[in-house]
Length: 268
Image 1 (cartoon, rainbow, N blue to C red):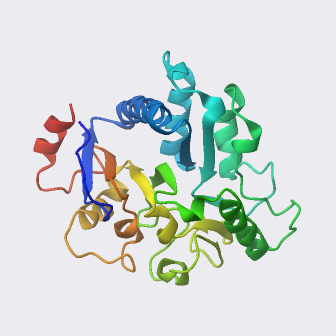
Image 2 (image 1 turned 135 degrees about the vertical axis):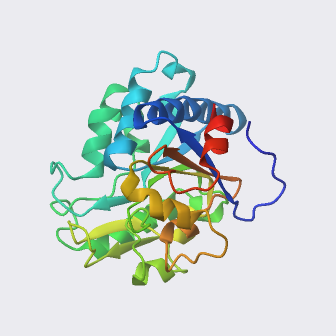
């Protein structure tokens, strides 16, 4: 049950724990369909921020094959990306390519509502800063910077060191307050150049859904659930929705949580 909130202050993360990544992907996809349909019922349109990676792609694949996927009017969904690897358009690492193959190419979406971050072989060439500026301008053109929330749901993965989108610990991007979109250089994980929403943009999502699996993420998950953790140390700690922040975990990723058994029971 979605908790009722009367404030737009960032919300405390709520964990959901599943036996494995397959169960997680199925439940997140089901919840996502319901939430997008409800957003359209209330506001005619829905807005969704997509993420890449194994878990994010698995969720999109489950959306594609869901028997009730048509409860959402896909023509009235605005798609955005939380970040993008600054590589060529057809490069397999590109989040857009993964999302199109897993979901978007199989749905009756409105192409004008699929808001991609330009590749390095696109109209801005190899200028990542120009791409970030263009994406910022795109949000302005849609009037979304005048709204809170910016997005209905923001899907995010989380790295072993707690990065979200392409916001890494102790990077200049984690401190950015003035912009919603930045170019990120010298990332510790390849490819080294990326485009990313900032935490300022992410926190203007109605709901943020963090999804992570595997025991390699367990330490970061345990840190995330502690009080007083700063985004500089763990960027995921700054990725909070205005209405809800949900953290979807498999048992391995949740293994260091002290109340893991109780949380697994409550997720069922």
